[in-house]
Length: 627
Image (cartoon, rainbow, N blue to C red; front, side, top):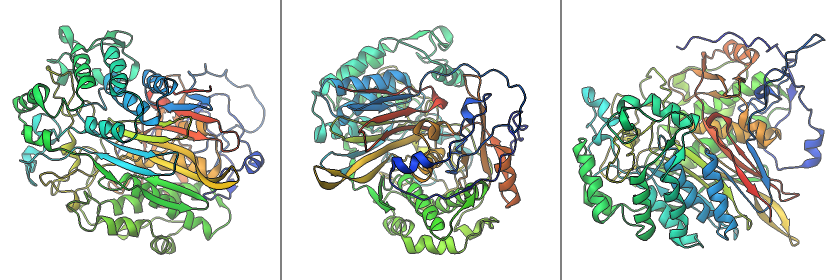
């Protein structure tokens, strides 16, 4: 267990505020009556501590008088507002690139193609053409769909291929590489919904790949992976680029120009042959048949309506939609039987919701191979099922792990590695797109293509191997064992929230929020906690995203409480009163630095203003505009 950090010197125990909360639509009159938190001038990220996982606003201001230290310098703005379009991505260049497509007359899907490809250039540690994605698209006409561009196991894969001493092969080397799928998904989305010419979405990204400034996030990731990347073009002269240096990837630029001419370039022809040869040289087993026969799948979004809000999520093989929606439903059911509860109780309830959701997650898998996947999801989103869970819960204690439905051996350790990128987009017509793209852990398989400039995924580690955890410490699940052509279970959680409103005198569903996150299983906890803060408590978008979080993934049976130093010199920390309250209820709590990174676009339904927020945890800066 990680050693607990000492209490923050300025964090004093707040009063035990009683708060009524529930999922509810936006109401500015109600929001105006909400109590405003007192502000401690020392730590900006503890302003109005609205513990993103708890919904309640905590006051950390010291009682009484006395002098206070000066406020730290304010960070770069992580918020952008406009009425005509907004993009929230975890790199400012990609937010701007997506917004440029909107200004050129493109829609949210056009912007999504450019934004995703951009992230593969400037965030190569977490996403790119060598990986996969889930796209949740909600059109202004009311239709919605999911494009499942999740990678899949090669035809030669088998269940026990990483058993025992071979376990490391699912993380590094060619054998870790699943069939890349991102480009197929982006191209399908564009064919179905795009407006601008394909090449106009790709060529600006190729130009960016010719040279861009390395930011702190990429510099840190490169340094961390320096040994693995030492022989690649990411380490010219034997060293990786550092913060502030210009990095050039002409191979990737050339690949993107080829893709602008031929969207199928990575599944047929010379580039595809180069990919197969390089993965084979690294010990892998991809074939031309694997690449040529991959197809993204169009799926219906999961849908949950609670208290006037409709939430859309991604179905299996992603577990994110089912777990986020189930946890929200569980919390709503609990609240319906009580009036006002303390902030500590709310934190406890959210942890319990996460434990139930992650336990049920073990039964999910690729629906083409797991017959019960749909039935499990239906149960998770059933009011009667969640009423039973709530009836067996207590606000004063947690329960033994086996009572949450887990069926696999408990495993120890919770690695901090986690790549992935997410972005959220809303355009002037109010088409909305939430996209999470990934190569799995940092720099994926560490196999870098000299021919194409692409970093290949290690998504094979997202499958389960009997008796072994994966890189994120998630327990093995029979529903997620390896089968040729199967897609591994994912935590990606792109989510869209709708709310009924009046348009020309008629009631129609309008986009209220578009959100997702990066960070392995912490994607689920991050998306849940931001939504809980915005929808249940009415906390501002910015404070909901930057507030400290808790994480629990059922196994290991530990609550991880966020505690880290932001670049601006501020500390993101869960207050001691919450940690003490959880421990009193039987939870094991440890301080933890690494949490998910959320990207949110929120619409004010009264004014039509879009508010885009990028997470300070990954140096993202959003973009928005008004015509």
